Image (cartoon, rainbow, N blue to C red; front, side, top):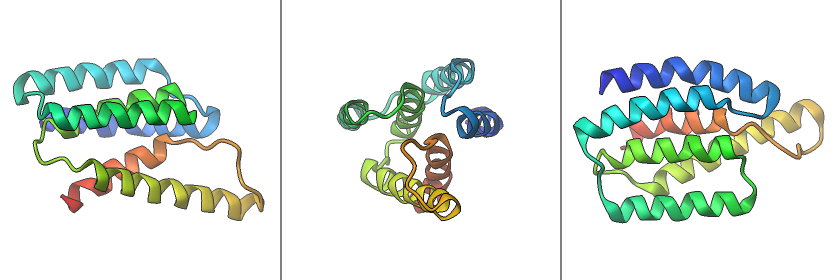
Length: 136
């Protein structure tokens, strides 16, 4: 478990920086996170299939809304990690993610005085990931 969290936070910084500059998340970082997630799931288990199905529906909705594929993959990894904990609340995580994204949009809007067409979602995902732990 500690290996997963350490790897997750080490990889989060370059992912956030790259996403802020290019609005893309490189697959190399997602592959490293996927390997760490697979190792974690091997030892900890997959979790509830019902929650995983709800997460799949949520990811599909994000895909339909036009969220980038890197963000979709990162969310899928985060949902998989949280689902193995057995007490995962998708609603709370999505609410924290929404609040983080809104704050990110407000910060960008304050600096430029206009709404952005696209935002980097990785900072909001990692912030929601970090804020979800104390909330559960």
